[in-house]
Image 1 (cartoon, rainbow, N blue to C red):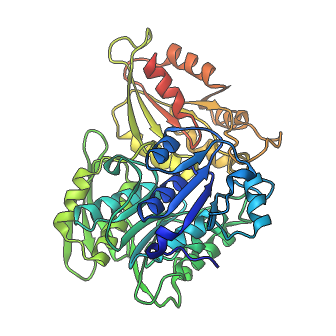
Image 2 (tube, rainbow, N blue to C red):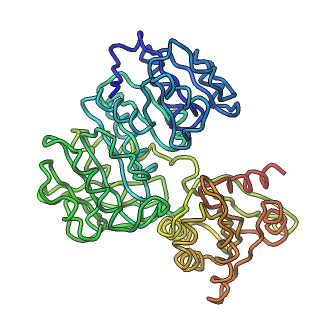
Image 3 (cartoon, rainbow, N blue to C red):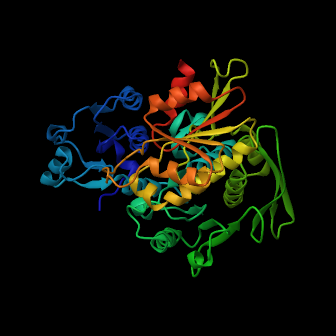
Length: 469
């Protein structure tokens, strides 16, 4: 197996097939900073690829065999690249060392003595971001890889000079089983990615195998609300630390209150230490109390002082596409106060429930959700759950399913969600395309309404278009 060695970077040429992806681009930049010669290819030019080019990385905008040159030592590719890709096929013909993106992440982690991996069906980006703020606040100078845009680091990657590293760890295709963490966090485990996993039992098995990656001197932090979490921890040699918002655990929360924007304030209680930490968050939602507890446990494992922790919580204002305030739109129907637009990445029923719960504590007259389901497989498997949780909003507008990696099977549609919501006696309208949704919004939303554009696809474009007009 090929080994990424930072000490040998100046003698190594790494080529990335699909370099424009948010994770691939970050690791391409990381290797470049360590002296590697880096090149790559993607189908289209973007601000990300232009940034890479400004760093001296050669990017080709056509994926052809000729891009695989004689001086390339290792090739990294994304899961979206298939064997019939011309560059992939040429690498195989030449017998070049190749590794999938997740393998690269694991290889990189081995170059750090402290490597934190944040796993879970939901909340990885926000939790990784909170934890990153704590590490930065403590002067730990971490290298950070996050699955969203974190304003504090100006993107999705921060390259530090210390031995500290933190990243998200996604279970899809068992990617995180290639990682090499010293500290692991498991936020939750639910049914998702059922185009890959057979059922919840297979998903739980994957998380158990992730936990087994931790060394004896390492630590696993996990949510005690995970059903039968002891099955995940039994026999592990590492330190086990639990958290939950309420109930029996090592870290819990008391005295939870909210400000006028739904930002929680609470007291974290550390069991057995007679220690209490007053926490004030600048992001909304009860679920973020739990995410913060996981980060407090991580801070203690890493020896971060309480002053740095509270300073980080006061500074953290969230990441892009996580209950992100976009602006106020004024129209003929909403000429005075206008309606507020929030964008959120939620694409699983549990995430939607958390977002709508946060929205209830946010200023609003009525809550409107413009929802774009993500993948046909997820929509079909969780159809009734989507309808159940979306029906808690006052009004729901359905966009067509964002296919992502899947072909249209022809037997599932966003209209199916709308029909189920209507059967519950709640307001839901299937509109399909973005233009129709925008016209509907402009005609129907009034002063004081709250619009949430929701989904993991490109639904954010609706809010941005409304604010641009």
